[in-house]
Image (cartoon, rainbow, N blue to C red):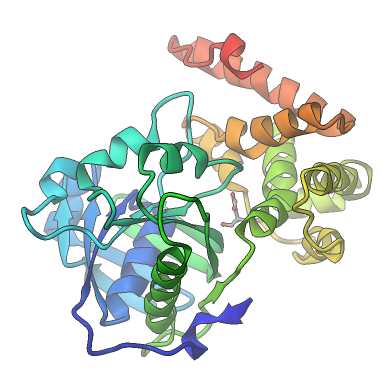
Length: 354
Ligand SMILES: CC(C)(CO)C(=O)C(=O)O
């Protein structure tokens, strides 16, 4: 990996036309960083927040960028069709929505704004195999993804609390539908733009780095997401509570080793040291609630399939034993059924995921 901000930059180029879909905590900070680079103009597609953000903008309290009042990207629109301007194709589409394949298709969602062969699609989302349907739907476009370690959430109507520094790792999901060199260059360009926006005035600790092995990076992030997210959600505990309770030693670390074993079986194992690093990087008084727990608490659908279902399907195909993860998955599926059942909107068709 290397730091994007050390790469050659091309500041005199025309500003890149970027569409950003999913302006929650992660997406709003991404749009801020991209605009701050001075090399991009962002059109943010906002659905429920459209009216309030058009009128008042975002009030942002950011560990990386300081306090901003009423901030907006270049354009805000209420739907993806309105984002499209004839003869001004998007160079990049950045997607920071939740990955809920059982509820909607990201490829269908973004289709109106993708120019075949031109627009690079950037998935800043959690989970495994999220690039597969995108490559199938857009076989001549570059597909990039980003692993984000950031603490950022929407608070109230138009506030963003960004309290965990932005640490974004970006890489290409290479495929045969486009010249590899072009896929590589477009990824590098995105890293350069993003990295330039992390170092402007008021930016202290954000970083954007390039990886040439995106699949290893994805599995590395799953060491965190398949374990902390799911266990904290099941137990209704924040990170510090799970660690202090003894669960770190009896459940969390063994579950991380199961993720590692699957990653190894499919040939994309991260460094073993990452298990210790993730298990001990936060202090025991860390009150962080993983995104899946926040989803549960706020009555939103959980990203169970991309965070745990897909890794477990790989385990099954490769004969890897996963007693803890499989149990956690089954318990969360039951939990999900209960929530959907109470709401009367059972979107979980268990047949579909087994
Ligand atoms: C690790 C972290 C906090 C990064 O944003 C995350 O991915 C989550 O809570 O789901």
